[in-house]
Length: 285
Ligand code: PAF
Image 1 (cartoon, rainbow, N blue to C red):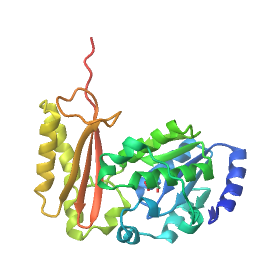
Image 2: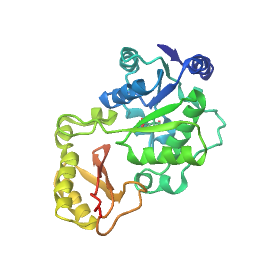
Image 3: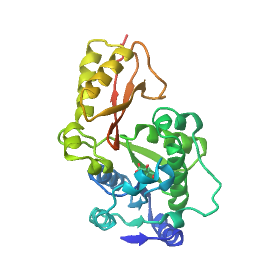
């Protein structure tokens, strides 16, 4: 496995891979878990070579503290990628990644500033900018992202569409622990008690499923989920959003098309996000 620390080395390695066949990119911020490895396995099934990046991107963090505390284990990550057959990994420092006088940003204006974007101002601008740079550097045929970060995936799809970036975006279903907690590098920062309490997010999706069968409307659903999670003393509910699964427009009344429920819950100081799509059966005539 090639480990590329500079853009020049990455470009050289990529041109030889691209001459031989298709390339799938898995961008990550490291501290890999089975969710990431599922992206790698999916990419391996669909491409001749899989490449990855490990870069804790400073521009998508709201605070220096959150950035510094983000878990890191480069050696273990590289071992996991090597064992999974990844052909090359890009591991830049912020100084390699960003020009000291950088002036250009990429922002999906509306989509970046609502929902999680309102909770974390600037976050999706940071994501869109770094992912654009990664696409330009790697020029992959396909790129793989987890559906857990539902809005991130929507931002990336929109940006690729609007900027005509020649890459196919694949969303891969969320991978969960046995108790339903969505896998995330942030889980490592939960205290033992918070870790035990965190599956409440998944349990609230099960409750939502029951309520949907009874014909609950969006407002009832939202309130029921909020109340259920808020009963957990270690959880602080930041947002419960019920949106159209395709457009991410808010859904207020009766639920007549597929919805996604987006959760943001803090187990101090760790912000967890999760999502679940609910398909609404269409009547056939
Ligand atoms: O989902 C992530 O790990 C990051 O947001 C990404 C896409 C690698 C960009 O830094």
